[in-house]
Image (cartoon, rainbow, N blue to C red):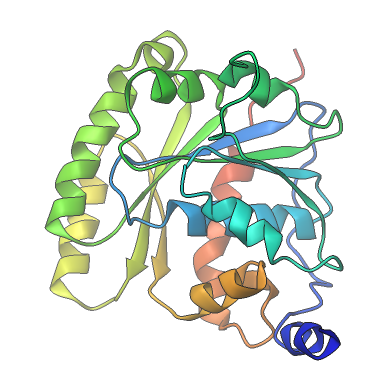
Amino acid sequence: MSEQHSSKESHINDMRSQPRVISKSQPVRILIANAKGGCGKTTIATNIASRYASSNLNTCLLDFDPQGSCMQWLRVRQSDQPEIHGVAAYQKTPGQVTRTWQLRSLPINTNRIIIDTPSGINGPLLNDLIREADLILVPVTPSPIDIRATTQFIKDVLLSPAFRSKPKHIGAVANRVKRNTLVYAKLKLFLNSLKIPFIATLRDTQFYIRASEYGVGIHDLKNRQKSDEREWSPLMQWLEDHIPDQSG
């Protein structure tokens, strides 16, 4: 067991330097959503959570996906890594506890709540989570099917009762991208045509798979590429720049 633990540690960076992020008195709730499956919602959710936890922010992961991938990621996370509180929100709760209650019953010192969602999300669940979210990220991968599905999903978000009554900051993330390809060029044209910001492009790399095996983020890996850090900077900066003002 100790040899396995040591082997995992050899791949993990000590995270002594992290970008400065802002702590707020109320937790910031970040929703990762797209009705299209396979676009990397869980990968983005776990990497954001890991980054915030490594920046000394009390972080929670809410997993609404019945596959439970975020919970599996937390189970393999080593005890010497910064703690992330996980909630299997997809599980049935006694007395039919509401989703709103789940979002509001987390540890009182929570700074960031990252919400992972299932494919096919729509209707009441989508509307409830939009209502409770502060920021919304929509991952999309470079394929014609994903582009069509994402177009419809963004329409559903913008036309939802929760969004129309109280609009939220929403941004698109191009995920699992191979640059200098025709399909990526088409994806960029599509994202730039949207009425929402296109905030980041994340490359297709095996480092994400390796990080998920250890229950860490790509930022935690010692042998990560500098290009990955550069790709994540605008995404994390966008999140911090759009934290709602809580002064009032």
